[in-house]
Image 1 (tube, one colour):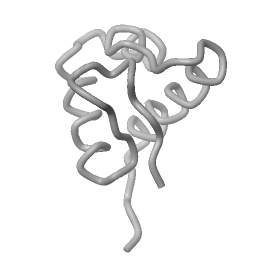
Image 2 (cartoon, helix red, strand yellow):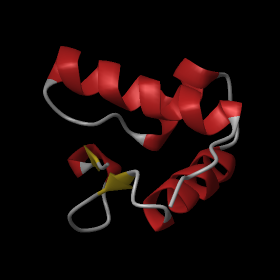
Image 3 (cartoon, one colour):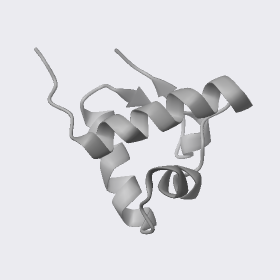
Amino acid sequence: MSVDLTDRQVRILRCIREWIAEHGEGPSIREIGKHVGLSSSSSVAYQLGKLEQQGMVSRSGRRWRSCKLGR
């Protein structure tokens, strides 16, 4: 099953990948928003929730700093 990602979701995944490579942990919701040009934390959280449902990211607990890329 293929997953259709929006441009915004692709930018968020790229941000997470680069952030983990540079910092050794996932970015916060605000850091993701700043990196991809979203000022609303709820917009970032919504996109992350969609990516999590699709199996593209996962996290342990409730914090996004613990996120890992899937697939």
